[in-house]
Image (cartoon, rainbow, N blue to C red; front, side, top):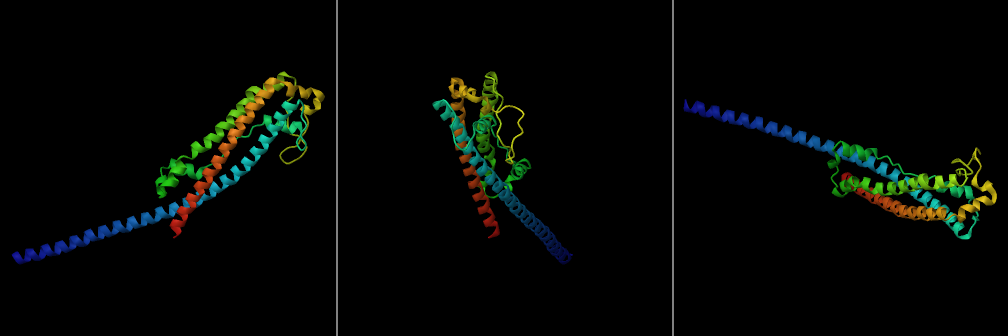
Length: 246
């Protein structure tokens, strides 16, 4: 009886060990498979982030270049305030005033980054610096947007009413974005003859130009900070991709 019981316990122990071993092996395989899928998802996400922020880099470089030209146009108007008349070769008065009155705003779509954060999956990125940079992205972008919104409000609340009160129609560029002649529905400011020189003797107009130039100059610094943040973020993305591929 004792021998029979001993043999039964040994068999049960072996069977139990086999069952536990099978379960642990299944867990290990599942964990390995989940990890493999996580790493595949991480790689796909990094590739998408690289494409997204490369687009941002191209866009911000172009916007920064345009911002510099716009800053130059407003600088030309400030020089006219000092001299009492507009005389800048290469840029008409109407084009300069168009830049002044049509402030540009930045709208970058960040679908990959936003989806990653909203889904709570940013931890799939093993690079902690990259996770932090993505989390701080909005705060860097908002600095540029806030500066542009200030310019927008300054134009809407100050420049346009001032021009209207002094009998000027709103300026427009002499050509549209495709360089086609603009259809003239209102008189451009340059067609008012010597009357437009009144603008450059208007203390309030010239003071507002100083404000517009100052804040645009500050926004230019923020554009450069934003571009630097994009370059740094791309470097982190590419470094993470290199780690995975190695």
